[in-house]
Length: 278
Image 1: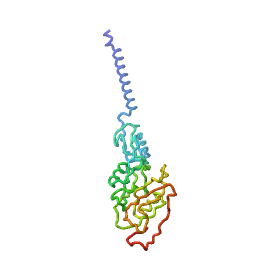
Image 2 (image 1 turned 90 degrees about the horizontal axis):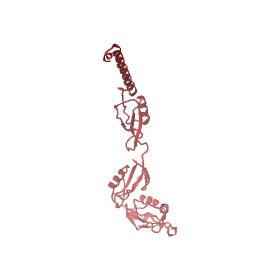
Image 3 (image 1 turned 180 degrees about the vertical axis):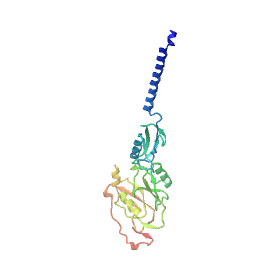
Image 4 (image 1 turned 60 degrees about the vertical axis):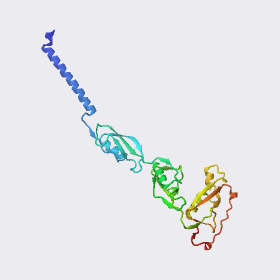
């Protein structure tokens, strides 16, 4: 039997078996190299700052793919562009590799407008910025409350608390600068709504003070907005002049029977020249 192991036929068959096995193994590895693109790598292009269309064109050229991993809002960043990518630029990857990207949102998310009226300017700015809003240069008007926020405005109009507004929106704060020694007559506010009275007071460099709705019996917000002034303090009179920035207390009602609309006639020639008549 052992003599057969050393015969020419056995040795030839053994060598052929080794050769066949070697060819099979070489073929397997060659197939795996071809299938996995062994040794073939692609340099990842820089995607940061590109739009989605630009990303798609850049990756298709290199036979790579992309997937949006996240979309976030950044106030000062260009909208709809790549912020981050993984793998990073210049990393070596295989063909058809997926590149994960984070992009900036096209539209800022909405938040509820916070209420900063009656806060100090410093605290109001800090609160608005914590909500992701921007604060422009304050608008100063005469007021008894120095450095207090009297109004919050967006695009030149008062914006009420809880109004939906986009992050990054520019808010202007109307801030009290203290009273002035210049005297003004109080405007006649009877039969006006709160918004109408505010406009009249602003034109006279005055501010609304205490608002009383006890005689209004308002049920809904609309009732409150429709309520009209039946009493003001101080009243409109040629004998009553107040410092610019002073406040006028307002009393509201929904009962028109309580409103005695009787504007006083004031001759400007009778006034002290230091008093401003509106």
